[in-house]
Image (cartoon, rainbow, N blue to C red; front, side, top):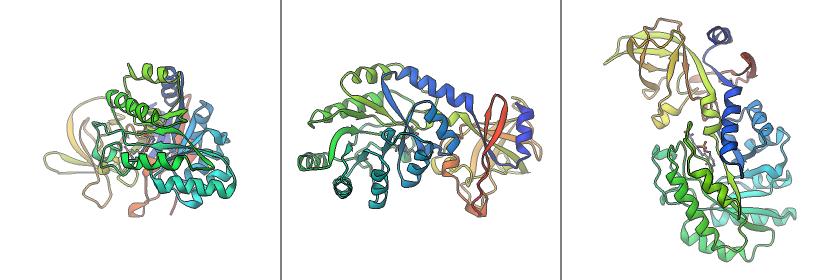
Length: 374
Ligand code: LLP
């Protein structure tokens, strides 16, 4: 592997690489656990067209949140019936584009967004299905920015709004409310909140007349240890179509950034190791205090603590403290768990070009994105 990484580094660091075998392993583990569940990959986690193709070939549907994501999903040749259009602020233009292109399942979480779906469906004379996103009101142990089902969240209908949706639902002509949706947050390591949320979704489903679909959202952390949850979801599937929308679980630990040491300087309490990857390429440490393991090509020697930082002109451009071998200028490092919300959240901040993306399969690599935006 080291030789391959050295070869890849010659394309220019920092550089993203993904390991296809790991993506397939994650996909198959999920399918084995959730045999009777429909899986909609959350495109926002990583929307590289080659990655989307892998998930389409695994027979997953797609969860999208914008016209841009929808276009990328459609480009894979997927049947639009296997796309769920989600989002709390869809525009007229986006809804029109989606319906015109055959999308028929929409999540909504406000009364005006439901009426938007109805008005566009009437204008285009198409029947569509809608899933009401609720607040699950469960506490999840994750970064506050990654909680989405709590009472104060901007996502989901509150009880008053659910009453109004129920009232309006009887008058709708082109939209049929066929499902309840919940997504409680992201990077959740424990099954319990998912179980609690599923029961609340079920309870609200029973208040409506025509519920066929329970969309139980995404949010699984990598290496999630599934025990009770698959049993519950597979059981629920006897009475409903069960959807899940995982992103991170499928791709995070299959993606890495290869970066190079550009400076080492005195720091307190440890020396700074400045690498050529920063928050423009991976914003998660700065935005969520996320910890990404960092490895070197020098083996697992634990010789010295460093504060690993990027080159961006921001004090928050810090990866954290790491125990590493003694490092020298130009050494390569590998940042782990970058496959989800890595490249998809990258920016051109500080006038930096976006990195290349590489897909490794059978120990050979191909470049899957050379796009530079500057
Ligand atoms: N479904 C809905 C409605 C969502 O909002 C999301 C993620 C997912 C599914 C997929 O969640 P996942 O399985 O990937 O956890 N940028 C953050 C994560 C934000 C997630 C936003 N919504 C991060 O870097 O951790």
